[in-house]
Image (cartoon, rainbow, N blue to C red; front, side):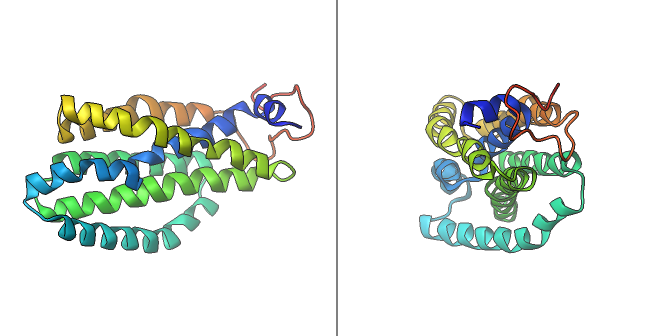
Length: 208
């Protein structure tokens, strides 16, 4: 099957992968870095201090991912996804309401863990688990969420920060998770079960 046939036959699960990867942008460096001027001004910290804090939060999130990531092997995919989506929502809300350096550090940790870590992990693990013959193609399609995020998110975030402010932008991002990521991810997984992947039968949809 070519890419188009594969996508048509497995629209929901492949769209699920792209969706989660796209929204992982909230925890990626190319988006978090856009808030640094606001963080430095609000908390009166230097760039070197924030860099050190960011590095520690990133290392801590990576360490946590080693232990938390294996939960995807034990929980139903829909329940695990709900946990991850609520996690990035919490991260954005904590970042938007941070009034102390400890809260800011916790927010950065959560953004890195649930955004850069768990959302990407969930998407890629799902593609690798449920596709066999077309695993490479499936991963490639889901991976499209990265360039889409890199191309769209910075422009949207910068525009919002200039117009509304950095706290309001984080709050708006949380709203996007509620109205877009949460319902869409749950809907895309509705009716999905292991073994419903179509890799050799173009024209038959897993959602039929």
